[in-house]
Length: 158
Image (cartoon, rainbow, N blue to C red):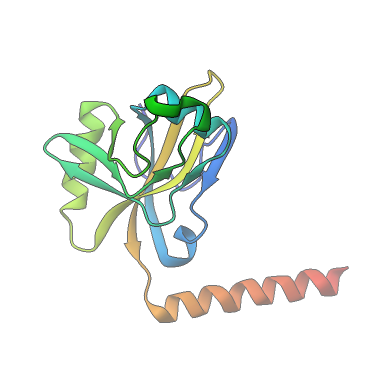
């Protein structure tokens, strides 16, 4: 079971895809790890790096979590047994964690988004999801200024 309020990522293993816009668009409150219920052709496609999570989000329906809007490319060798690229995918988590996450998503301004899809040390496909709050425009500008300042300081040191 993952602990609440983790700031640092705990991703280990081969990373398939990262949501690069997430850190710029959102303030990350908590991170959690979830398994995914996938078909064989989806796993094969993931191993080839064929996934896009830029516009994806996690939806709470009943006591289940669903990944919506994630695109897993079709696996060419699967021919007629292929999967639907944009289908909803069930996320696998402990019931207690799902309950905690559900309570927090009811809070104003918080949502769930996928950050990283990766294969863990045992070869299982995992998804790192985050409970996030949207950043304001001035927060984004401040982050850009801070990054520029850090780059300039690094150049001066060299």
